[in-house]
Length: 368
Ligand SMILES: *Cc1c(COP(=O)(O)O)cnc(C)c1O
Image 1 (cartoon, protein in one colour):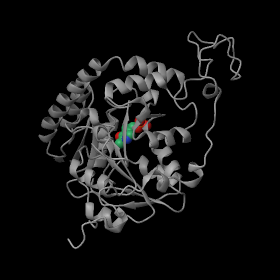
Image 2 (cartoon, rainbow, N blue to C red):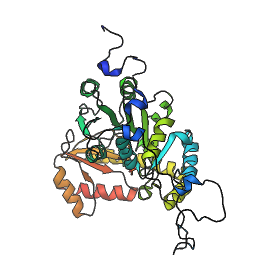
Image 3 (tube, rainbow, N blue to C red):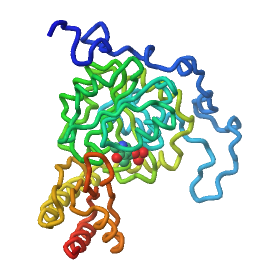
Image 4 (cartoon, rainbow, N blue to C red):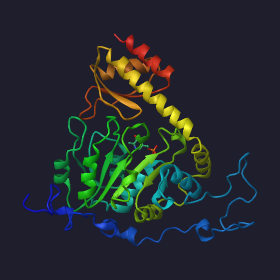
């Protein structure tokens, strides 16, 4: 080591090796820095009143049993308060999106200048980061995971330049199922001058701790979670981002004013009361996953099953396409991931109910 301020991340770490983060001022797009956000009727009057004639709603009601004639709370306060109690994070550090996919898109729109900035992705990983980058015209720098699906830190350090604003890390990773080594993510957080987004869509199934606890340590951390997987609410479209108050304020400014509809807010709030039921399903899913792994290992066309911290497994087979089509004929749909780099031969299989898993196994035992 010739120079203590220099690590593998080079001079882009910034002058202060302890705090390389360039701060939001240096990260934000200028148009967003100067943006005057939309001010809704519910932003301009927040108290309680008996007559609301300020939002051009239908005052008679909705042609339904439940009334949806009023616009929803733009800041989703009740839902955030409940999430805050569950996660131990103040509401001001929580952003809610129409799925975490919306949070991903809003992050690109807030921080990345189209045609100028770039993002680092570490494939094989979740496909939406790439799609969202492409929609926003943000260059993608790909640094493949290693053979054991971990970060290539040297490669990432080399790929970073002064236009790199974001790095997306999915942990547990989709489609590989493993968790990314915590120390490696911390190395990125401590050395990268932009934002590190840790997507924890599958964290409820993992033995690893969430990065939410690190929010007070790292100003450049964004943690994504969702109600779509363990919480069983994919159809409601509610995703969460946890970050510093400053980052959350930016995301709130950029999002559409009423991005979580009233029905989703009400149902999410109801569902969030049933933590025990969800925890029971998580335990059952993990037990089913382990059983499925044991049984699948006995099949001669199964070459490998990768260790999973999620509610799915990546299974390397001798004939992915044929097995996929065979299962489709039986009415069972899995995900063919065999065209993806480092996933040659692989099918991604979601853990189902005991009966569904049994059916899957019965059918696979009859393959060839
Ligand atoms: C399923 C999934 C999501 C969830 O997206 P929503 O928009 O919240 O449904 C996010 N990230 C990853 C890695 C996923 O697999």
